[in-house]
Amino acid sequence: MFRTSDIVLIAVMVGAAAFTYKTKDEAENQLKAVNKIEAQIRFEEDTIDLLKADWSLLTQPSRLQKLSQVYETELKLQPVDARQIVGLNDLPVRPLTIEDITAERFGGVAEAAPDQTVTGGIAR
Image (cartoon, rainbow, N blue to C red):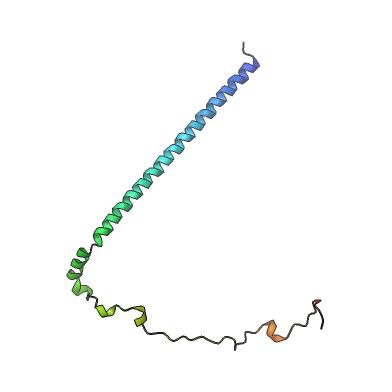
């Protein structure tokens, strides 16, 4: 009936079919994961766009002017005076002080005594 070679070929075909099914299933799972990540990215981009629109709405100068007028007494806000803004040249110069670190002794082997080790250098 069946020869040994027939049984071996059938086993190889079943193994190849199982390998093909496993590979296809893994590829589909990876595709699902990629699609899920792309959906998350689109959601985050939409959220960022919404937050940018909300920020531009909240920082409109007319809105901030109204809020400053409403809460002027509680926040004790005062308008900026033109003389409060100065250039860099108008600021006083801070005196420069540099400490003299050469006069200090830090201690250590080098200050205890000169090194008397002969290293094979040229003698005088």
